[in-house]
Image (tube, rainbow, N blue to C red):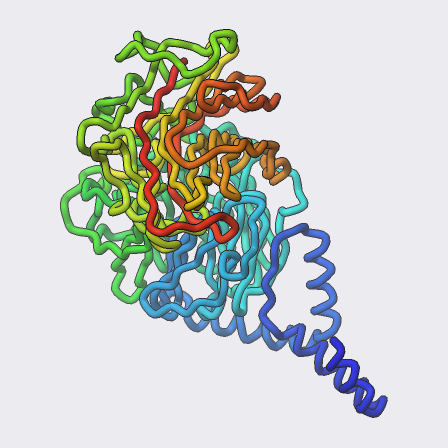
Length: 600
């Protein structure tokens, strides 16, 4: 700022006016990152840009439309969540934490993670501009982030939504976009037109994706059971609403002439309708798919795994995928419920496992080893054990536990988690931390789409509280404090923190602490209450008595604090050994977990 004042004093007044005009024009034309903090604020910014450079904007808009019309139906495009195709080749993937990764030669224009932005809500969708020189990201509250030549046209960041945003779709000319919520509510911005929604319809399964027709005068919505809803000039060609799916639908992509579409399931299963050709499937191969990239020049498609890997489908016959339905367009999706996840067996160490979306997910049985919670008897903790893993079999029970959220190589709390850092040995479950690029994590998330993983989640009821207990050996510093950022916690399904988080123990500043996180879906309450508890490295027990109205934390058999907050959504278990630059750092270290027990 001081250097600018010196420069300003040395320039004559007329030249100052010209310089200011050029600066304003440059600001209008520069690519701007928008953080989706509120519709009204963003609208005023865009209005100023248009009023200050109307001729320039009209030229840009004309060029965008001309480009879109000349390339329509010839460039690659995609369908799915947290990924989008680069029309110039390649594609991008994104994580809910805001980490954008380019694949196949696609350029990178930035991301919330790269900018050090702390997101109030997780990201769920992504869309590219027609020339591949920019992209938008959208969070569950409808906050929109724009990069490269993607312009900000508005958001639902300041609107109270009935249901969270799940996907976004750009208009063909890139001068607008739609956001769609899980109830099918559609929000249009820029030159995107509203053609209808399922916001007033009772859906059997939530909306998960959206696709626009090539002329932008219509769109399809697809539910997780494959129910398809068409609006504007989008025609209905069939759905999987009446089929029993092994995995939920992850996305929809239309054919170049809009006379058909593909549905892709999270296991890579492909379902074709209208003139969409069947070119193979990845169903049954054990992959976890987040979207599909279509090449209009060959009518071929490539599937994209959650970890960003491109998967070429095979021509293994899939009867369901080759047999589109002939029913009329649905008013609601059918009552068929997809299996999420497929679970042919119960995990060896889990006395009861839990399907997602239920309020109580266990059937109490007698304790397998007679153990009771390490807690004062006066606390009244339950004694009917529903899960017990002693980590004494020499190998990880992968039916119950999965390394990391979605597989090896994902990022948690700024640390790259690798399955190679997870093992079971003489001291129980070992989670190794070698560097910020090499940590260890396991979870029981039943929705992580890992092959053969059933998982576990649980919630209390008014008559059945839950007690979760970990026995772990925490990594130590030279002075005996807690090293790095080990954590033993519970968390609900997205959107975070709407369904809650209970941090039973997490290292911080050389000690340990407990916290909770909660919210009403708009990001409020994300930073919940908690307390530091003086703790050394070494072996301890950490537990929580979780009722529908409060959480009481117990360290080494003694109550260390209670938080009176209602948290009653199902949560799954996470254990990790992470790095934080704010905490005492020791490499390499191991957190050994001797057991995890749950009573209900």
